[in-house]
Length: 264
Picture 1 (cartoon, one colour):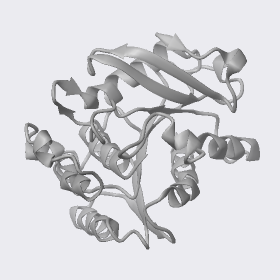
Picture 2: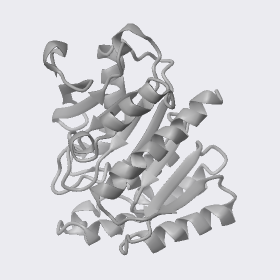
Picture 3: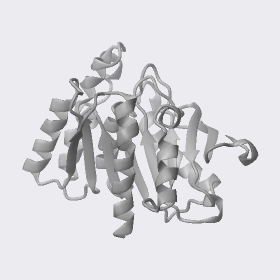
């Protein structure tokens, strides 16, 4: 286990590397720790997942997620919370946050990352509310994992999400056959939403109006959720499938989670 020394950290970002049994190797996590966070207990935890080709640093250094959170806290519009930005396990061009190839990228996110952070960051405890969010492949991961493990999360948010795993092929050249060992229903967002429709945590998702790859399938998911009676919030905003859009929209995820904390 290696944790960055607070004396040398900047912008309230902490970095951890630790051995993962699920991955069979080391894994990396960047964490936004709010001012005074080490002196508090039971802070909310947001798991924020990146997209293909990314890693634990992507949301911070391409999306400025930590800066957005800090500005909102200073403005009094966001309660102090921690944002954990883990790598996806660094398999190929994107693991999909799925178990395959001898490594369990799902368990890494759902069990190991939160568990390690609770053990090593004083601001977290077993009572910390937990949320999950992500962009693109990470949006797919947030939707799927949030729906599969509804008791683990108090809210789900997705930006420009894949809604079907096969949409991975729109962004990478990794043969999807490498994921074929996974049952089709296991990979399917709709399957888990339907199976746990009565238990789904508060859910929101959005997509850019210029996202020509994923806009229609996000609209289809909205329509299906409405037909199934699954409460949700769907929004569309100007923008495409890029970091300009995700930087602009991360505040919506944080506002949404903050509203759920306010209502607790």
